[in-house]
Image (tube, rainbow, N blue to C red; front, side, top):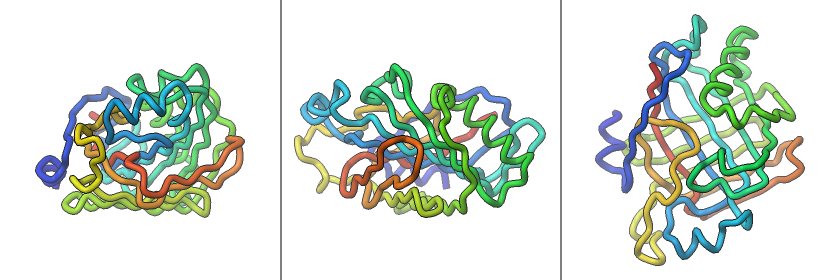
Length: 222
């Protein structure tokens, strides 16, 4: 299945991560309030904090452990709002940010603590100012052949994605302009069919339907 995302994807990337994790594998979805499948013309117009200061990141673990805690079948969602556009340096572009953590309601207390530990190791910048940690029913899946993703966390996070195609090109020099915010194994940029955050704590809510603002990915941490 991992090969499918390599063959079908417009852009595929790889990068490694070293965590307190034992063969953690799974799927990853991300959306931002700026274009990520784009070229310099759009990106420059959205930089300098004009757009792209908000993001949703989500992981679903197919198998593996964080420390000695099995996370198989669980998900975690990280929602951030930052002072600056989350651009080439990702979360490190932000001088400061606020974060909401949403933990899978299926997780035990020990597993919830392990999910928090995973997030703090994977995207440490995002955990510098966590304003709310909550437990929600989380549904998340990714079709690696069609490149269609779906995420729902309670009533406050919705994300539906599809692969980006030629029909989504405007300047005809589009690429995966900004890298994903988290370390992943293989990734492809996509279109946010429906993406929104309606939750408390960040002082802002947003909706970005139709934007070329998503990533769909697989991850493998050893």
